[in-house]
Length: 258
Image (cartoon, rainbow, N blue to C red; front, side):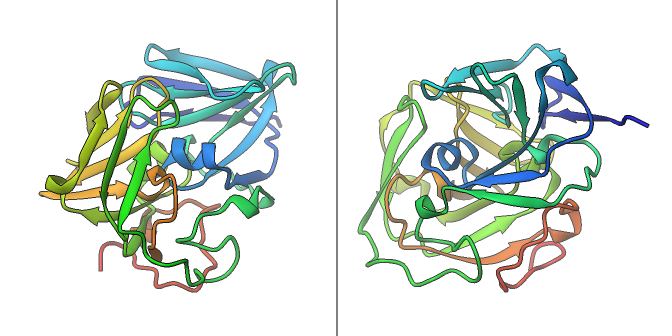
């Protein structure tokens, strides 16, 4: 029997359906995917005729290159879709699906572009010398800022809201908000999440940038455009992780917060 898979953004402004079978998951470590998702992105896909946008009131598209556009929710900033021109396929973030999809990850794209704070396989390696300043920006450049480096310890969060927003899972580090030097905030938008966390993103390209929870300000690691000087240190909220989302880097994994 043919199965239909349903997906949505974190706030519910965008919903879609995809008729299976779904392609196995491919994860992408290119700079564009990192800026958009805040960490690295992943996707499954179907032919366009088997994809249907059921609710699209907040769906926006950003042409990120000559070959593709990216679909995101411009109310909550969720990174949802990647649509290559002329190929007849629609690519969907596994984190957007509402129910388990039962898919393996079989392909890794652009591993050579992975940043210094994690390794594509195995535990994080020792990065380059710690930068004194961190340059951060969204994909389109309408949000740009700097802050003191290095990033230090980076935490990966696998809660449902982070999965919905990032498309896979998030990775962020704490920072002193008072030290952020803004060059451009013309594209900045915020969304007060369902769990009491405020998320900052670009309303023009959908890039995830920062979040604030209980007075703690954190930068999405993928927003850093150069070396972070940081290191992925732990995975949290694994009790909410998806079936495809099981880290194999040997780092500590906590059911909730440690």
